[in-house]
Image: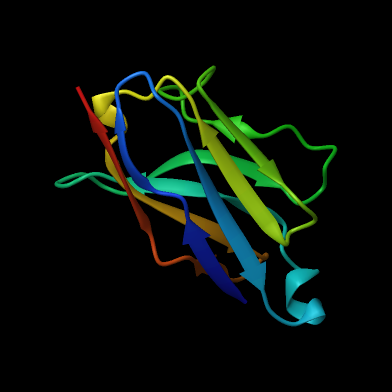
Length: 118
């Protein structure tokens, strides 16, 4: 399974960005994905969960408290996972990583930089 993230950039505080992550691989691998989502890592900080959703569309997504009400995660049958980020704040500045996991394996994208200026 390979994940390709895109959509990062520089934005002013209060602005919006959409991150996208395309998932590729064999059908046998992709069908085993149970969660997809986004983490972020700011300089000097540990990587933290931003948002996560189950590959089953009936499952409600989870968000970090710091982004609730501002970020929206969406997906497409484990082939794609997007993160719409609204009302961005300087503290949202970080490298954002998409991920997908099966019961036994976690896959990571290459990371995309998001910088929010004040």
